[in-house]
Every structure is written in structure tokens, then in C-alpha cells.
Length: 150
Length: 150
Length: 83
Length: 83
Image (cartoon, rainbow over all chains, first blue to last red):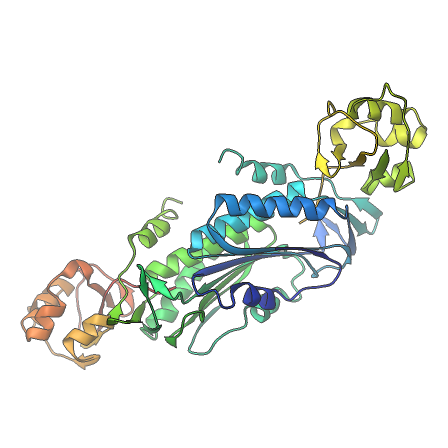
């Protein structure tokens, strides 16, 4: 399941909804990404997440399909926010549910790694020195590449 | 943080509580373990979790300390229930929060793997053929051993 | 052909989207980028380092060799930084 | 010395906890297990395969070579199955 929205989310309610009534699920793994108040040693006041409506949904759906192809997951959710967010606010929620915990862990980490390098979102940070577009991290590319060989 | 309780928990509220006001946290990973309705091809009606009060808390605290020694985690929670639980009910909640997602993912998986092989809990399953004590899974030992070399 | 610009590419070029009708010689993404560079100083500045420009045609990532056809939706943007 | 039994060990032995005063020759966990085996058919049945019996002394896992002292809390249980 894919959702792209400006509004905040309730991680517990989403976990509950994903697992409800599916009694073959043994483990649910979730990742919540939050806005940090510092980046590269500098204070960050807030950030604005821009995205490419249409392509975002298309890429997230492809990433979900790839995870379902690789792991026996019962269900999953990728929820990404856009708009202006302050430190401590939730940005992204990824949930995976599977009969066995290892599949849920791996699929969740895969989804987070891949959405960071494939979903068309861009962060504009507000710092004391003005606004600046966040640069892509080489570490994120490395993290995504871990899954390529499979 | 360690909690051992009979009562259910609200994963979203615990995630929220763990991260609140700590704006250096970039990622929160959680694992929720649920009672499945089948095991080894057989239908399971419910299960009762027995534990060793005192030793349980001691082992969980040791496991938490070990995770904090290995990864730069800002905070974490291990919450384990005991008593009678029906299919679909929550058994265990593990949450890890860190500046970076990879530490949070690894620490969470480590905590789940270790508590499964070190925390003194035992499951008694109710099946159509009567009650039976769940046997330890070799796969759980293997999973825990992954972390030994580090 | 519909063009979309995002993040600092949008900021430097000064518009978010436009419809263009390039000459027939602009048959690939690479040719389109070269053609756009010559449309003004904002374009030249935004496209001066193509190693940090990503291109999507009809919402899929494509290499510069990708052929273009009339009616394509072409988006230019920096490496993504979501999640 | 306080003894605690959990899960199917408790069920087979028929009690959850007891206080015992073994002879001085019972100086290690291994010797205690052998001594317990001879206390009755429930004990013999519960302890017949020691590869599936775990021992904790004062709430820490110990090997059978572990020495015992008066006042120890000794718990016997199967491999754990929580989580």
C-alpha cells in the first residue's frame, strides 16, 4: 500500500490496521523517519519536502512490488509526507508484516533504502545561513546498492 | 528501557514517547511480535506465556546494555507480555531510536534475536490435540549467533 | 513536449513547468539538455553539471540516450533526497 | 537452597518451587542434577535428557561445572521460546 500526503500519521494505528485479522502474521517491522534538528553540524530550523506528484506514487508502487517479489510479505505500507516539517516531525513510515521476522526486517530495510534513492522527493532545509537544498548522500547510494546483487 | 507486563501495549504511543523531544533522532525502528494461528501446520487456539520473574528483567536489561554498547542508539524499549494470548494478540515490542537508520535497524534486529534465545519465557500452545510446550527453534539460535562474532 | 523542473533546477531556471516544441534534431534526452542550455543563463547555470541532473521521461528514469517523441512528459531534477 | 522449575520441567516434577538441603557432596550444578534425578519418577523423567535442560543460578545461566553454595537460587527450565 502506498500513501503520499501532507498530513501527519499515527504509526500505531497503521501497524494495527495492517495486521488486523491476518493471523498468519508473526512479526511487523516499522520504520519512522523524523526531521532532525541538525545536519552536517549545522542547526536546522525546519525543512520543506517537494515531490513529483504522479511519479512519486509510480516509483513507490514499483518499490513495493519489488519487495513483495523478493520476500514473502503478507502486507506492507509506504507512507511519505511532503510540505513543511519541523524538527521532531514524522516524514516517512514504512511497515512490513510477515509470518517470520527476518523477512519483515529485510523487506523494511530494503524499502527504506530504495525509496531514499528512487522516490522523487527533495528536501529544502532552513538554516541560520538561509535555505539550502539537501545534497544526496553517497551512503544512501551504498545502502541501496547492497540489495542490487540479489 | 525494559517492561514485562500482562497488559497489552500501544506501539504508536510507545514510539511517540521514545522519540518525543529528542530531535537528534532520525530513525525509529520497531518490531511487534504477534500470536499466529498456526504452527508447524497445526491450528493454534491460544497460548500461555510463562516467565521467570526477576531473571526476565535481569536478562532483558543485559541485552539492552549490550545493544547500547554496540550501536549509537539514543533510546530503546523492550516490552514483553506474559499470560494467555489469543491469535492476533501482541506478544512483544522492541523499539530502537538512533540518529541514523542503519544503527536503529541493526540494534532492533539484534534485540529481537537475543531476547528470543536469552530471555526466560516459555510458550504453551493450545491445539486441537491438547496443550503442548513450544520447542526452541534451531533457526532462532542461528539468528542469535550471527551477532556473536562482533 | 511538457517539461517539468524540480528543487534547485526549478529555482535556477525560474519556472516549474512549460510546454516546448524543439526542432526535429532534438531526438534524444541528451540533445534536449544541450538545446535547453542555450535557452538562457538560468538554463545554462542549472544544467552546467549534468552529473547531478536526473531525467525522467513519462515518470521513469532514463539515460541521456533515451529517444524522445512528441507528447512526452520530461522532468529534470537533482538526485533525490527523500525518506 | 531454593529450587525453581519452569515450563514442562515444572509440569513433570509437579511443583514450581521448593527449598532443599542436599548433602555436602552436591557441590556443583552437575552433582545437583544427578542428586535430583534420584528423588522420584517425576524428577527422573524431567531430567532424563539434560541436553534440553537449562540451569540458572541466582538468575544467570551457568554450566554444569558451576559450584553451588548455600542460599543459591537454582532454576531449571527448557530452552527458552519467548519473543
